[in-house]
Length: 192
Image (tube, rainbow, N blue to C red; front, side, top):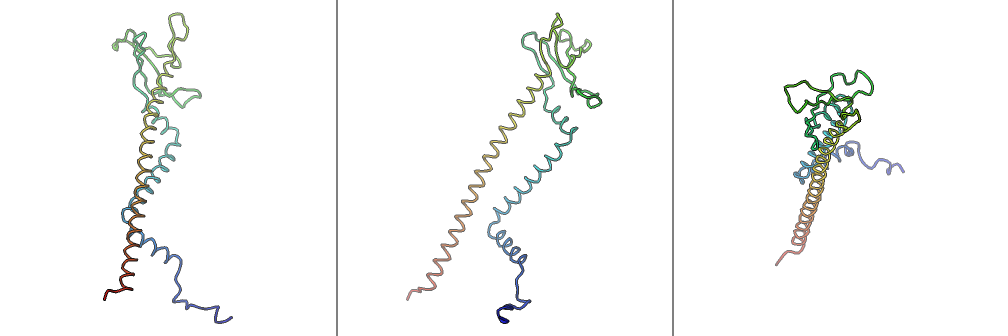
């Protein structure tokens, strides 16, 4: 039992971290392109995580939404052009809208702005005719949909790229193993 207990000398033992370090070094040496792409993907993942953390802040999220919102909307029936501006009072009270919507009478920008109450345009009878702030929100949704479509295509291209890189890495590894096998066979069966 005593001789089974200590088969290696402490100086000869290999630590796990040394094995992992050598393995990673060998991987980087043999697969430079793939390791570069993996580093790029890790950086991209880190950027996404940081972006998600930043987007949790209300003021950043509000600024982003306001930047994506169209500056003007035109009602096709009446021809009125509606404008929006950031609400300086947003956040001071509850149920406050982030934007204020206004228009100019007869689309004459030299005249005084007429602000809409809660983004609603009323007809001459005092009945709500159109919810203009909803139109601005739909404008945001259309931009977000365009961005989502672009991200979907980018993700598809990225998946295809990763698959192609894995196939190339497998092919190179297979080719290298095949060359080693052929060399070993030639060495064991020399020609006379």
